[in-house]
Length: 285
Image (cartoon, rainbow, N blue to C red; front, side, top):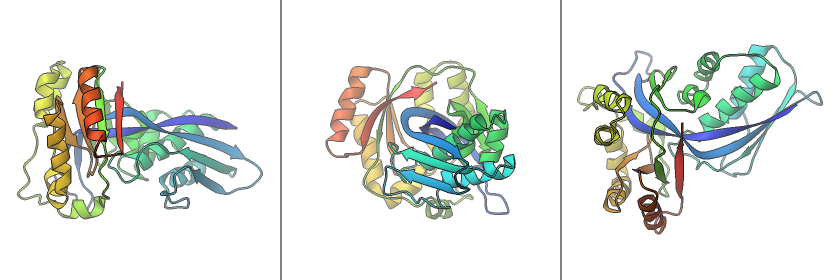
């Protein structure tokens, strides 16, 4: 049997890490959204063999057990007690190593797809808990809709307030950022935390102008100090008329929000002139 799943990229409207656990894992508090920049993941089960086979249109992805989609297939097969072969094809559109959760979203797509193929009837909550064994972003990517995400990534609370149909300009500079290296630089004793309560209050009240002012990413200054071009790109987005602009995840991708299509297209055209990996997308509600 074969199914197709869309693996949507994610953005961090806010990102805080309140503290670090004794085992070295970060505690998170984030407001996350999905955007319609997506990989298409085809999942097929077969009795012809018992292997897990991953193929991709991108030459940048590992196709072995280091691939998160591979790990998701292996996990689901073990949990479900199956012995079929699994073939995964990833049509890659989400930039790799960009802070957009592309690998996590592919893994979430595999969890959802195998849940459908094998008719396991696992809830999103159960798939999210399983996904945490793969990566902290997988639980959110199982849902792929606006949500507050806490804990180690396993507490996903979808918003009850729909977000407006915003335009988003997503731009990945030509640099690679190592998430583990950035997280090692976090100084918890002196970190300035964002106003998560104020941001959530503004979002829940539908006051998005106030929400734009309260957006934050506590890792932005760390990555931005190491790679100043990230902060320069963010400032240019504001100069071109963005309602809000911010780095996503540990970077290097920067995104801008615009309520008006005409302004969004102007920002997109301007930024694409000097950053080739730039996309004009919408939120997935």
